[in-house]
Image (tube, rainbow, N blue to C red; front, side, top):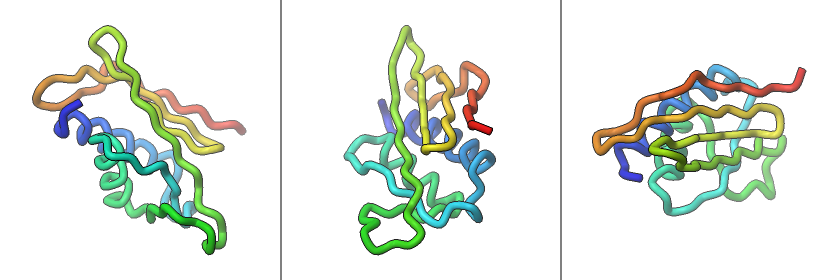
Length: 112
């Protein structure tokens, strides 16, 4: 995935995450750090929305919110998913050389 596509998907998912999990209720987020374009873009997008991203939570109180993410390609579409223990968001995107655009409605799962 190119950086334009990763940035577009990460930006959209982070904005939707901010609607579902407000920054005021989230002291910090801990997410797996890797060298992919999407990981870097998602971290930057979440920070832009005001979330504090941490890698070492051994001394933090309260504990940071665990955030996981995944991308899966299928038939010229990419399914993006980000999840915490209480909220999961998913959406498919059409990826082009110039970026990515949503190709499905946003799916939000939150237990009541």
